Length: 202
Image 1: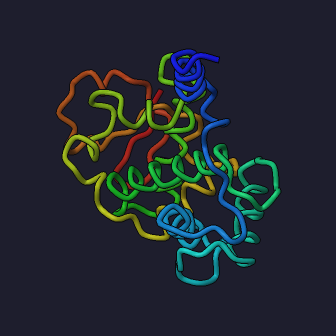
Image 2: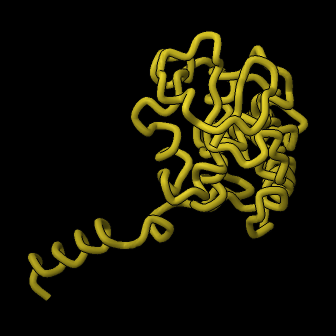
């Protein structure tokens, strides 16, 4: 086989194979920064009982199984592309919850997380977490930089409870603080409920 043809086939495989095929799997014995990031998420969610070490041992495997069970994933204890993506989604949502509602009650924080999930299900919004969160002008915390603050454990657990089905927003796809909102358009939305300083609307 000619060298050029071999190069072409290799390049095509790298560029066009599905992402799941190219991504690595973290499992017992794995180590490194990616393991640490996963462990941080598991720790904040309450699945991992020890601080992150960067080593994927038995405790991490068990924590991953618990995470997979709660988030409707295959419970094999290995962190493949789907599990890692779900963990990343949780971290992204926790940043929004913390940036937008850290001064609100726990119920109010779960409601903010639920709004993100409600938008994903609504055809009028992007169909994935990052698409919803980073949609232009969608969340004040992203616009003003508070998204980049480090979320606490409460924010992570609010995201978990929203994924488990809790929705204090009652299906809302919007929320805002009427005392500081600057967009007149948001006041035209139909209010569903109020939790703390936030009105939740559709």
